[in-house]
Image 1 (cartoon, rainbow, N blue to C red):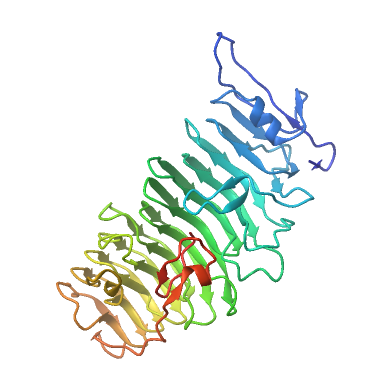
Image 2 (cartoon, rainbow, N blue to C red; image 1 turned 120 degrees about the horizontal axis):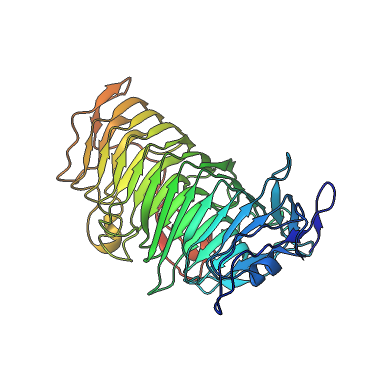
Length: 434
């Protein structure tokens, strides 16, 4: 590993505590800005630190992949006027350091938190994927990955998790990812961070056992991704996960060919049933579909039900509805919705066919302010029942309520074809990270 600083940059680890015959926790500093014991890499410091320690990384560029498998705090440390701690791939590129708990596919994570007995806190760092040299669809690259582990990611920048030119169509490249094996748990909070220039997803929490809290982050997609590229999503909860998504700004997730796939700023895809998921006070837009609640159905008929979507500001959809509700029993209330390419809120019946049931039913969509939608304020598909759709406030919409809009052609495409995942599933519109 090569470590650089404007003067002399290196790692150091200070262990403070009284030895009692057992492992002891420490307050730790890392990186050449104090006259203390030196370590050549972050990984060496992690390996040497007792569980419960705090590792402070001094400003510099650290070319390595880091694995944390114990309870630690890893934080950037400001030295004089410099607080830029940059973790980038080794000069030889990223290599596999774990496998996907769901698919068994190889993953190259820049910062891997795995199977920890206690929480791991990460703050004040930049994780940059530039120079990863990934030139295959068979290796997923990820910035920060929690596997069967809990903790906090706070005030970090995660960026440039993109494969080499010519491989952008691979459904790989996630900035922050949380996943959980069967029978395990992960509880992770991602807050006050910057996430951008990802190939596939910005912030993702998948699997039963995962609880992901996403608060106060700025997540920006690539804008219009040409056909043949990856269908991006800004924030995703999926496949039995639960959590909350609050006060984030998420923009610029657009797939260029809506006949193939769709991108969402916030995508809830087969999330845990009636688990109290809340999507609130976010600002989303300039995207294909800002907020989507969706069930594929073959994971279970009621997955994704019971979500609350409230007090969000939604603007500028390029193709679909502002809020697409393709599950049941949800509450969509007090949102401000402007300039939708179809409807403000779509109570969507199209997902039920996958499990012999019905979607878009028994929802509450009230107290919303809807300005300038191309089709209708509220679109409740023919056949949907049990919905409460008033009162809402409308301005400059063709009609306040409708049962039919002229949708773009529907999408039915195998994830195994589009996304390259081993778990082949018929996908409708969306391409979640898996």
